[in-house]
Length: 134
Ligand SMILES: [Zn+2]
Ligand SMILES: [Zn+2]
Image (cartoon, rainbow, N blue to C red):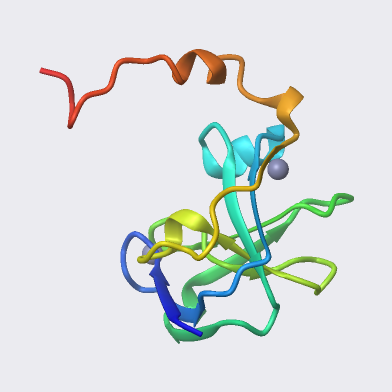
């Protein structure tokens, strides 16, 4: 099984895991919008023991939303989401953007679709630029 590596924005937290994912959801729920500051979370799911932390584990803080099975884990230096084990203990949730190589699966579903940002559909039609517009 090929390995895939990941890290946070500042580079303190680094990890590797087998490129072996069972699910890939784009979650549009309002909690994921808050947790990511964006339109949706892009989370891959793999076995809970499929991770080897290489550095920076002491920088990770985990947040579990009271009364809900929603969690977030992030680097306290740069705020980037990093992998965490789900509250059920049955999956490792891996933010797709934290990975350095292409995962072995593509997104399978948009979940909590009715909660998507009011501007999400229009965003698909927005003009494309290679960088900031002139
Ligand atoms: Zn960081
Ligand atoms: Zn969500």
